[in-house]
Length: 488
Image (tube, rainbow, N blue to C red; front, side, top):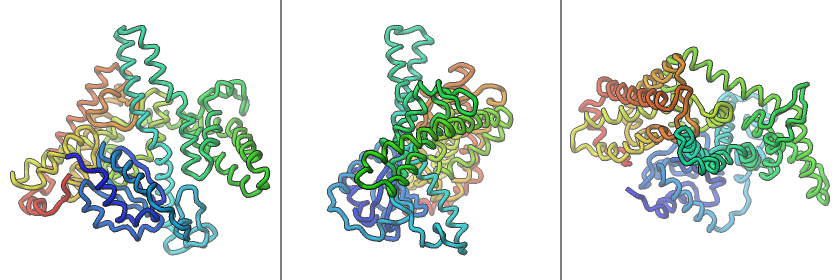
């Protein structure tokens, strides 16, 4: 059912404290992500009850409103229009809250810089790690639509080339599909500087050094550099360095010379640091990431797949799965595809199987059946949040049996990786059946698709069987399901 995006956005805004309380607005494939200056002003209970809201992930002040694919784009646009049309808020201490992108952290708060150990310091450290992961995810989230589009076009181009079709068109299609990937480092640098409080174009300028052909003439540590060495990790590090240099310059350069000296010094210092340190180090890290992923699946594939498939749904539930985007992007740059995404996608298959078992066990007039029917198409296409927040998580045990299905599907794909049949994805974002156009591997498309389909079917079957037998969908659970569980 298509929701009214304007009404939904208008309902959400006052429940998160109004325009003055919103410090950042972003979206991923299914969620409206909000930064709030004062999280205590948000009404979580009322937010969950807004029509069209499938769930809410609240983690250390980060509010992720789950709306589902398609709807999130429309609601985010309407929400941003409401924010833009609101009168400017006066500056207040809340505006300097820790963790707000581009603003300094307060140093006097417990657990902050300069503060001694406190009873909650370990919890503060954990919150700090989550905040860093969220900010790293925010760098890559805006790039996902282009990664998906270019990945699909690259797959189509590959099929045409292999089949010998349209030889006059394929060179142009290759350029269209690969242009973004060739300059991915620049976009990563731009977004990194924007997210961490620097001037975005300066972050992009320094990150562009990573992919410039001229770096082949530069020698670092006695070894000539290669264009693209370090990939997205090098671009990320370069932009972080540029942001740090820029902030240092802003506080020391006279105001009359700031417009001239600060950009020049930022690009010079960060650029040289990138060439003579970061590219070499990031290149080593990137190579290690690729080697580790290949070794993990080739050596312990079934076990690694089982663990990864089992843990991915909890990561999605917490919104931390986006922190894996830099790893996927690195593997795609190095090998042309990421071998981790198809394994992780099996979590969605377990979720679909569990939901189908719940559907079968419920009585025909149970309201939850309507929720499952509306959420299953999205689940089959790899969008798991509607099923997570509308079905398995409210029921409890089916969430665990869905993880078991994901573990089985991941073990299936991992087992074939041990046999030498690697399954990868040329882009990140889609999963489920939507991932088929993006599949790639080392054994040809037919074998790759067969292994991936086998993993999906295994995940469906085990998720269904485990939920049917152990998921607790008995009369008691059916009665609970008949109460006011969320509708999709």
